[in-house]
Length: 184
Image 1 (cartoon, helix red, strand yellow):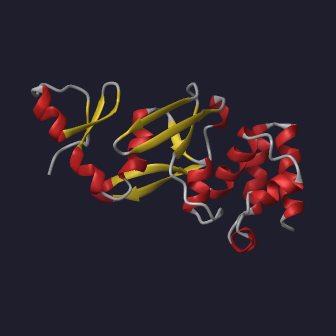
Image 2 (cartoon, rainbow, N blue to C red):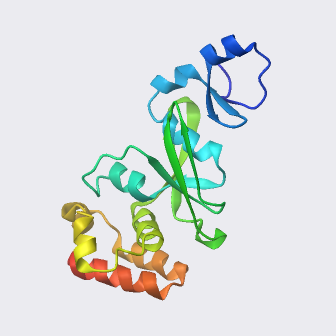
């Protein structure tokens, strides 16, 4: 088994390097064998652009809150908005101010590694905050949030606690609209 899946210095001939390694972004590489390992595309999302955590549509899909399968891995970062494409996937990073980098947990994966992943409540708030067009009942209904999940599993108290930390009247309005739209 290899050590860390991410390398920063490569001294192999170009042809051999291409056969063994996949580029993640400039200066970041991973062993090609990790393409077949579950969850490593998420793991790399956290590593190629730091600080960041997986959120938004990717997290909502992961938790079963939206019906769509998500191809692009979406994350939140305090760095500038960016995107990367590589053999492991398509990565998108949305910027928030540093004070909003909270509400994620470490989820274990293989090889004693962890992924920084938004809680369901924070993923939903990140979405409402970063996509201000979700400002009507119709737009919120078109999200097609799973009503069973919202009723049974969403922690509304935590949602409200996290929402207050944003200190955004516009977000407060969208959260109230969400609660009304889905009878929470």
